[in-house]
Image (cartoon, rainbow, N blue to C red):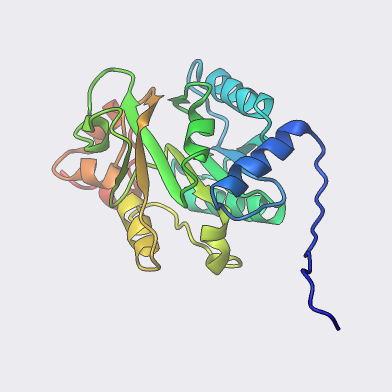
Amino acid sequence: MAEKDIEIRAFRWFETEDSKTLFEWRDERGYPAHIRPFSTMIAAMGNHWHEGCFESVYNMAKYTFDKGYDVQFYEEHDRCYNPYDALGVMRNLAYMKAIMQGYEFILYIDNDVKPAEDALVNLLHRFLPIISPIIAYEDGEDHDQAIAKMERNRGLAVVGSVPLSFLLIQTKVFLPYVGQAFWQDALGADESYHFQKLESVGHRPFIDTDVTVTTVSPPHYPLDSAQGRNVEDLNKVGLYVPNYLSNRK
């Protein structure tokens, strides 16, 4: 057989010009191919929205779609018997849905966030396994949260853990855990536990300091807050106190 150049051909059809543009944008940067580039399932943990928050998330989802991205926004059924006690189950259900439906990313959001309409698009373009914006609080306080104190517009920063209020994760991060419970329920299984679990398999979260998302309510850490405080004090700030803490004086 005479030597000659052999062209290896590949054909791919796209439904829209936007889909083609996204595919080519990724290909030029050496990102891996995906059947739905940057497709994202936005999973809200419950439907107990603070004023204006649902509208902000909806507008962000619509803006993302209008830019040519495949996006779904849904509310995960609240499975908590007591406050917060089934958030792990809810988060596990969400990532399994995202994987089974073929999404490349899952965006976990709480019911008290007010993102700008371009927040998701900006985070997607970073194309990182785990990324969060700076989480700021509507009252202007930092509530002793290191991330809320971070300097804005300084690019990317790698950190040990981040709040779960607005968290974008590539679904392939969860592939080793399919059929298992990655997220565990409160109490005790907090952010630092889960991110240490991820770090043990090579993942650390990034903060995009160029993106800030406002949270309406301050953070709640029931176990930390219970130390040295009585039940009446806890109830004033709306924290759930499990029975085994109720006798603390």
